[in-house]
Amino acid sequence: MPTPFPSWADSAPRLVAVAAGRAPADLVIRGGRLVNVHTREVLDGWQVAVAAGRFAYVGPDASHCAGEGTEIVEAGGRFLVPGLCDGHMHIESGMLTPAGFAAAVIPHGTTTLFADPHEIANVLGLRGVRLMLDEALLQPANLFLQMPSCAPSAPGLETTGHPITEADVAEAMGWDGIVGLGEMMNFPGVIAGDRQMLAEIAATQRAGKIVGGHYASTDLGPAFHAYAAGGPADDHEGTREEDAVARMRAGMRAMLRLGSAWYDVEAQVTAVTERGLDPRNMILCTDDCHSGTLVHDGHMDRVVRHAIACGLDPLIAIQAATINTATHFGLERELGSIAPGRRADLLLASDLRDLRAERVYARGRLVAEGGRLLAECPRLDWPAEARATVRLGRRLEAGDFTVPAPAGADRVRVRVIGVVENQAPTRALSRDLPVRDGLVQPEGPVARLAVVERHRGTGRVRNAFVEGFGYDRPVALASTVAHDSHQMIVAGTDPALMAQAANRLGEIGGGVTLWTEAGERACLPLPVAGLMSDRPAAEVAERAQALGRAMEEAGCRLNNAFMQHSLLALAVIPELRLTDLGLVDVRRFALVDLFEANA
Image (cartoon, rainbow, N blue to C red; front, side, top):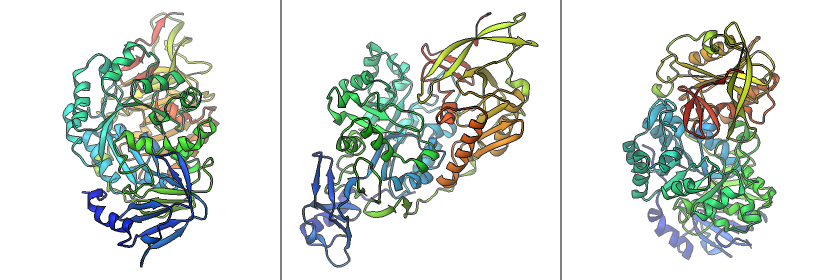
């Protein structure tokens, strides 16, 4: 069992002795400009002394803390910034295990993650959460987990690999490293007073921990207030200024996300920059970042830079990625600032607006420099049960990916899922499509979409149509990453290629593959739960880039199109989704027929 980081109580005698000058520090950093997120000021010349992985002294002169064996670091006028915190994210979205994710983000200055592993929970249940936690606790930075709340996320509308129960939640609340309940996606259940949802929230609050929110609706009337009364303490699903305002006014933290495909900061940050609301109630997060973004663009440093570019004061932006997050999770005395007693997590940067981590310290150790990881990120030996999760039950054929038309019809009107670039919501569209040989034929911008049940080997396939990817030739993209139940999702224009792509993932144990008439054009194996690779982030990013290029060559021009693909089964975000049970109208939380009426 991994050993948690030593508590403040264990370190207190030495911290006090170092701060008083009775014992030498392990590390003293001087000659810098300290960013104090408690007072929102920059303190020129302030110095820090570190002992036992924590800040012992933070003040104008730490010379009394230096002694034999103390390492002295000259900051050279650079800013000392608290280690960055991601307030809401999913490690699995990076297609990396916790070790790989930590290795990717530490060089960018992220030293704390608050992760909801509901992706692996949908595949492996509580056992999957435990495996994620075990690897998280091995890392040189702080990886906290929230116990997933909703598996399935939309009961009755999808099938998950392992349902999460009230007992599972209660058990996890006693684990070290679990800091709360993951995003409560079943917001209709909370609003309706669902017994299990309220019981999970109650178990979390009895443990003194935080309940994550997920209110994916634009309705800010009684339904929103009922949800807020149900206990969620934050929400990251806002896309408008009024969403951020409503959450703050309801006593929640508004989490503004910038992920690989979600650009929701600019529209909401005006709640602070223009309306002048208290920025303490605003937190920056990523939600979902794939490996390519992490390797090439950054992580929370990227979010902070973006928020500043959107008009946020640099010091407020840093607060929203450090102390605000720590305070929200009840960890203000533990991390989120450069202050006595806190974990010694900081980065050195020459410019606050163009925040680039030149040196990164975590728990008092130099873990990255110049964008290069210096620390080891230990990996778990993932068991066979986590690597054999794709069960198709049979070999799929082209006919599995066709849609029979109503008898006698030569054209039909069908419901079509409309992809919205850079946003999680979709549009519910209606399109007239022709019928040939008794089968519906997509045309123009409309492509085929299918969800294949992969947890229990039922062989079940559900078909629908999608618009917005721009595929203009025979192509198929199959993935076992299909939020949140993570069945297999296949999009394309050719049923035979769709069958080939789906069968390929069954052979390799999960991942993403793209096929054209020339054969397989890109493949990203994800053997851990069909969601993650235990290869280095740079290697995964390279394969992900190759996948992106292959999608572009097939006519797709969407930004981060794979992220959009992976969300087409997410039955808790409006408007229209496809699951292994059928087409879901998320506005009504009901299964609907593919056909509206004959054209």
